[in-house]
Length: 281
Image 1 (cartoon, one colour):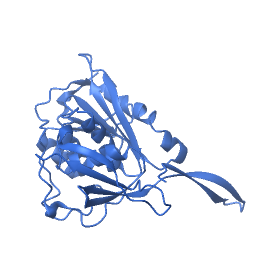
Image 2: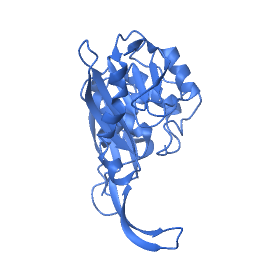
Image 3: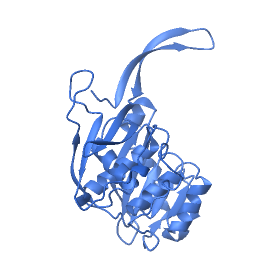
Image 4: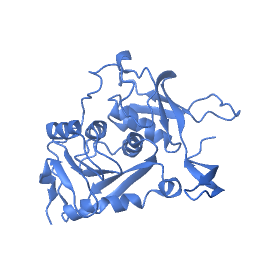
């Protein structure tokens, strides 16, 4: 049975020689096989929960879908697991007839670990994806104070992190009125930062919100290439991270017209590309 949190008894040790035991709570991590019409497509390690959102977001990030109507059916696999219960570690997706099945050369030939969003991609050319939702003309304007408040708002949506200290998180915010207010759309946690992003983007996709014009994606870790690309694939114009960006993430954001902000600690932040969307105080 899938579990987002697992209890475990641990031994504690100290520099003074004290030894003890106590219960601890661990972030769940299990494999998830993604199938398209029964055909294996990819395996990713993830924290169980919001699995359909994760799969939809993954297919969006891979360029397989770009509209909610492209998924005709999504459900867990029909088999049973080792415990004799339904297999909740396999999700099967039936695509709409108008969606072409992904090229076999893009298939993940090895599993995607919880720490890597593009590991296992079959070729270098397959790393870059072309988005159907262009962001460079997005006219979103948000106040710097609004963006600076997002890490704290994201932290409030992290119950699994509070219990385990072992998961990343992402949240999607929609720009509001002319004052630049930001409304929370969805949030997710996962042992993989890329999975957390896929979960929030996939939820938006399944609810017919694509493209995500006028939104800000806040992440708990660093701004890497794959997170900028995932934001672009969904039409998100602004990515904010609490940690550092990579050079390729900044270059991709600059090229695509996507605003990349990082080192957002609630008091200050750095804007690395297209700063015009964030208004100074």
